[in-house]
Image 1 (cartoon, rainbow, N blue to C red):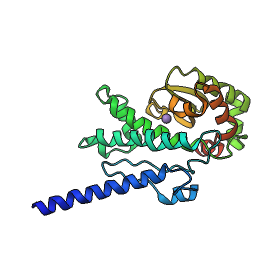
Image 2 (cartoon, protein in one colour; image 1 turned 45 degrees about the horizontal axis):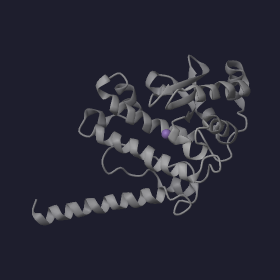
Image 3 (cartoon, rainbow, N blue to C red; image 1 turned 45 degrees about the vertical axis):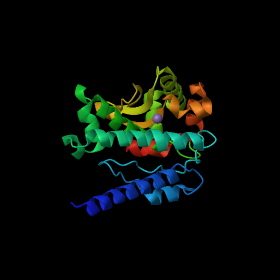
Image 4 (tube, helix red, strand yellow; image 1 turned 60 degrees about the vertical axis):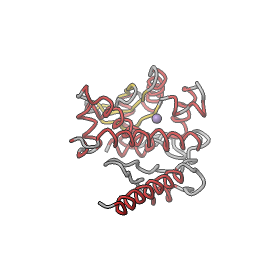
Length: 247
Ligand code: MN
């Protein structure tokens, strides 16, 4: 490679990085550039320049969950935190055999490997956040129907029983983590996990999740995790997503 080629290769890399930064900036710009879920969906995954894993697009605009979750929270949570986990994951798998695995496979393999805790944390956080965005929708809340409603009734005491147990798990998770509605041994159940931990690492199928890391709610609710949890349950929870996961 002569000097000219080297220079051209570097220029191309800077150009590509600049393009990615522009896409990222557009993605976190809220109302400007990405003003509807259709636009976000049409844009598709933000391509990763440094590895095999990509940051999936949000399923709605960043201001779509306001006033319950502000565009500012979404912009930082998605554009900085979630993107950061994907970027860190791509760095940690670089040149490793694990780079060929799917994200789900990587989580199942690394949870059992004490030398790969950092890789597990990045992979699980990348997965958990994608699942969290889908667990909510604009004008969510309401009541589940059909098979999911029947199972909530038989396994958790109906919608009221679910809300009580889910809120208790969300509030009872000490420090950072997640609260989940899952299917375990054929029954609906509530679980909480610490930090990056995720039910799919342990063969348990999740239906819904709420992120209870402080970064998920502190700008909008400060220390009032209970108010954030209530807003999630009353205005945001996506029962269609849970029903689809139940199958
Ligand atoms: Mn989070």
